[in-house]
Image 1 (tube, rainbow, N blue to C red):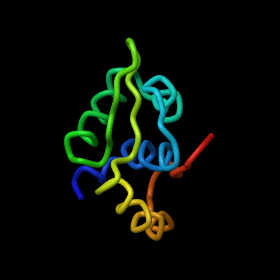
Image 2: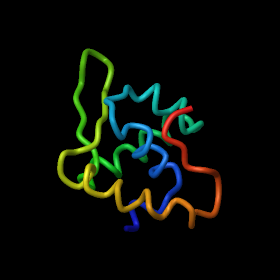
Image 3: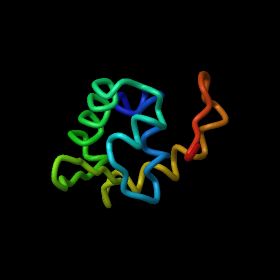
Amino acid sequence: MKVLSHPARLQILFFIEDSEEKVSAIQKHVHLTQAMTSQHLKVLFESGYLDRRREGTSIFYKLSKGQGKKILPCLEGCTDLWIGPPISKRS
């Protein structure tokens, strides 16, 4: 749960819930620098929440079929308890 405690990581998970996205699209959604976005993606990937693939110089991320797909339904029930910036799926 520590991995999921950062609001940017939650934003990332909800943003790519039903899609595969390039790092640049994820970065634009979470309004962070490329370096910070990449750090959060790395943590989520190493924790098993995301899968990634490389296409040329681009890296694409999507929810892993295991942990990633299982955790979002649990988290959606808790978004009304969130204190901080709103969690949005798409902007």
